[in-house]
Length: 213
Image (cartoon, rainbow, N blue to C red; front, side, top):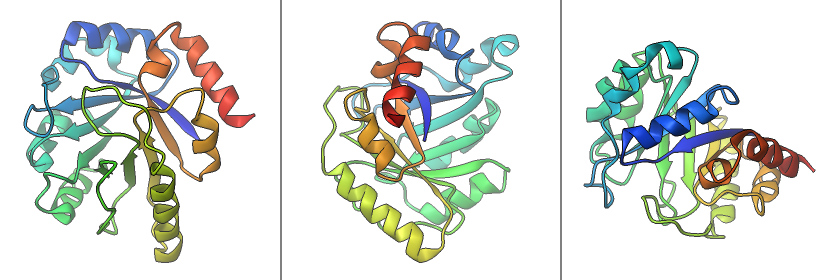
């Protein structure tokens, strides 16, 4: 199971501090985007990721769009060099069009579903399905344990459909529950506080060790 740092910040300066802290220890970095329409609050302008190209050229950007009509953000994500774009389905009109437009750019396409959202239709070309372990947004909440039933459902869908999408979880993943997530059959966890509260390198190593032992 892969552990990817996730950055959710209103201010780019704060985001940049975290990017610099983690870029030497993780190839992938997820940037969370909130537009104030999907959820309360608004993150920094995505284009600012291009401000320091010499320091970010080796980072693999994973962009998580918690926005109204994520399809309208694809061009912006492509502009900053995203290699994976994930859109929340709750304010998405057409999952198929969203996935296909991203795939046409040679970028991995993902769908994200909030904790209370039914899994529903998954286009065949989808590369990743992200299940939120708690309500998405700036508010910090513990993991909702019904996430594990949703994981079982999604694993079953993947196995029975023959699809090859990765399964990821974001929200509330920490040292206390990461082993359970690893044992659930998912491929990726995204972590925020569990990585950035303290020494980044030590936290990443501890999370990896706990997840496997």
